[in-house]
Image 1 (cartoon, rainbow, N blue to C red):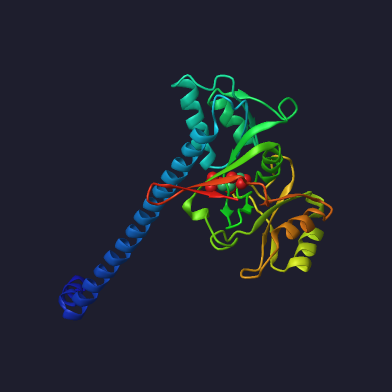
Image 2 (cartoon, rainbow, N blue to C red; image 1 turned 90 degrees about the vertical axis):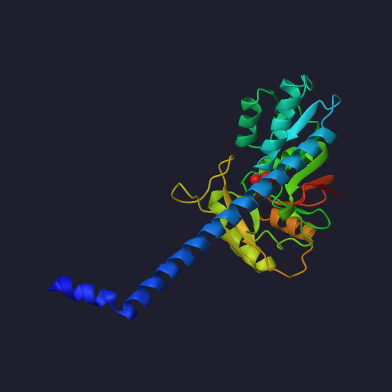
Length: 282
Ligand SMILES: O=C(CO)[C@H](O)[C@H](O)COP(=O)(O)O
């Protein structure tokens, strides 16, 4: 009886239409999801290729047999730079005496993994060239750094270098800060001071500063130096004097360093979507 009812209803045109539409809808949904995933993968591949081209070009132009001490930045672009240095060291027999000074735990282990000479600022405080990535670079070559949480040591190492060279992909190349990088300016702070620091930054410059939370650990991110990280989302479209902002924030007790790098970068190498490299000078 039940099966007979089912059989009849299934044969009704309305049912067949609904069934057809549902199948179409599912198919359209699945196709849209698939194309989104495919486009994202294509973008990721293009961005990574751009990082690689920028990093390799910068290494080949700036790391020569005369380079004795090299600062090594942090992030995903810098991996390509270290790979190129290792290739020249171990395949092409160059750069045997090059000493690499790391700017993070990640950089330290990259240098060890590729069997390069590991240095430190105690013995090698005068760096010839430092190469590092960036989260965003504006037209005056002010950088936002610290997306990967390593800004304090990165700034110290960059500051010890005669030439500070930035390597990045085309998504980091902006006219104004905040145009493409929406996660704010990273600021490393002493854990006990983050609430007053947050309130003072917001009172001074507006926007919102928040503690960066860890993804696979309960609670906040803890930096390589045992501190907390705040991300200050400044007001988009407001004209900031970044040198002034950087000085003012650095003066707040408990702030260890900001991810604003003003007047530090010597040249920026951007890997472009078309495979070329754009070089920006200060
Ligand atoms: O400042 C940094 C880490 O603190 C990185 O250099 C910056 O986040 C860029 O990273 P990536 O090369 O992965 O885009």
